[in-house]
Every structure is written in structure tokens, then in C-alpha cells.
Length: 391
Image (cartoon, rainbow, N blue to C red; front, side, top):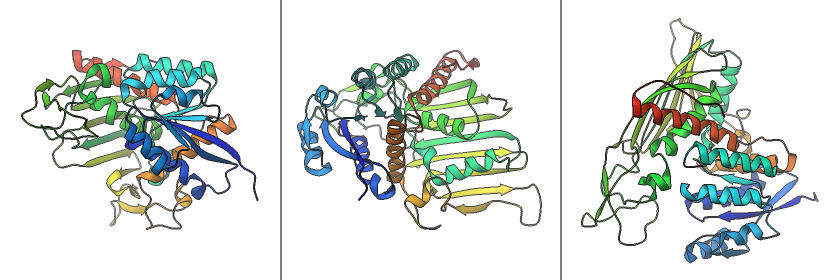
């Protein structure tokens, strides 16, 4: 029997994403049986007792608490998942770094680039590994796309289109929550959705170096619920209204760096009527192009060459050899899903912790995305092109 190093896991915030992190840790051994480490769920913290109880009774944590400090002070906790709302990220991340605990945190890591930079500095000073929830880059079809691009199969990349359209806020009766408050969420759809698009474009092509952008707040006020809410709940039309303080829609033209002459168009909406989670990226080059959609996560459409009777896109199914596909399925046609992307994240995070080599997307990647968001906000305010600041 293989002796595996036990890694004690602490969780801060037991919402949907905290539950997903927990399942990812629990399923890691099934996907990576050769792992020389084994995560164990030690303690979970949440401000709501019912969530604490759920963490123990359903997720399998050994104990729960209403005070997140108990997680960071627990000697059995080796790593921490931070899945709280945006306005708490900085506090929890800095505390985790101060406690010497490596942490896996969701995006946007900070409400702005300044907070994110503080988190980066704290993690660096403490010498702790980090991971950030840029999960879409782990899709096997996206990894196949990256291989094709790196091999020059598309020729020189000329232009990129990224679209992230969702309807989770399309209902005008969607409850006014922290997501619509600038001092609690930071930006709106820029940080919530378009940060994923920025990361995908950067991961596949090159860093974004310049931006011109526009934003729009489509639903300008929302009802304030008179009781507790969960997720994207609706409120009553009779409830008092509050003004939405950040953007529902954002679009930007971008230029890429690192020697690339490529340009791009990125857009995101949280109020699109019709799309549920229509996230896609298209990349065009002088010798071919490709496109990927989250709605058909295990398919990659590829066109190589510029002529011929059968010129057009070929649908290529994800298969063993594409990213971590074989960890979950034996062959093409057997799909992987969103939850599997989080298992890959958990593996990369814990491998980064054990090996001392940063394998997972890190808080530095989160800062790179935050600086693009910051440049986009500045451009939306004055209508000018803005250079993206260096991290």
C-alpha cells in the first residue's frame, strides 16, 4: 500500500463554489490515483450555521465553525480554499498568507488591481503557493487549441474574438445584492465574467497590452430583498429599490503583446436575454482558425488551410492526450464537465504546494487580468485607448 502525505483542507465560505471546491478535493484521488498526497477535509467556516452544518453533514468536514480564524489557526489545516464574496477576498487572503497557509481563491481575487497586488505581495512574502479559479483554461479542448497554436498550425495569429454572455441578472426583479455594489464587488461583469475571457485569450495567444472599452448598466435599479437570499434570487416588485453601481455589459478592443501583432474583441454580459452561459473564443490565423464554446465543452472546431473543395471547419472531439481528459474519460465522445475542471484545479493547486513549483494559475495571473480590467474601466470613462500597466 502506498503511503500518501495527508493534506488537511480548510474551507472559508460554504456557498456553491465552496461546495464545488470540496467535491473537487474529495474526487481528486479517483482522477489521480498515483498522487503521493491525499487531501482530507478538516474544517469549514461560514457566517450561516446551516452552511456550517452542511459542510460537516454532507461535504464531510470533520468540524465546522462560524469564525474563519478557526480555520487559519487550526494546526491540522495545511491549505485553504477561499470561496467568499469579492469584498472579503483581500481580508481572507492576507490572513491566510500571514498564517503561512497556501490558498486557492476564486476570481476576481481582489475588488481592483490594488487589492490583488496586495494579495500577490502577501503570498510572495509568505512563500505560499496559490491557485485562482480560471477553470475554463483547463477544458481538454482548450488545451488542444493551445497545442495547435503553439505548434504554428494556425500560422500567425491575426485576431481573436471572446464572448461571455449570460442571463443570471437579466430579470429586473433579480435581488439587489453585494454583486451590484461597487464597494463590495468592484466592477460588475468585467471582473465577474470578462476576467475569464481575458485569461483565456492570454493563455492561448499572448498578454493583452492595450485596451479601448465601453460599458453599460442596462438594469439601473433592483429591488432590495427584505429577507436572506441565496445566489441570484429574485425579490418582490414591492420591495424598495437600490441603484446598481457597476456595469451589466462590457466590450473592448485589445492589442496583444509578447511579439504578437494580433488584435481582439472581447465582450461580456450578465443581462443577455437568451444565452444561459454562452462562453466562447474564436482565434484566427494566417493558415487556419479554431473556435470553442463552453456549451459544447468537449468539441473544438478547427479549420486548417485556405482552400479545397472541403474547406471549412472540422469538429474535433476531446480525447486522451488533450489536457487532463484521460483522467476522467477513456475516449472521444465521453464528455467531461464543469466539475472535472475544478478537480484539475485542485490537483494543480496541491501539486504546486507539494512540489514548490507554481503549476496552477496563480494570483499573479489574477493580477494580470485585473490590470486589463482596470485599463478597460479607465477607457470606458474617457473613451481613449489605455496601455495595460505592468504587473
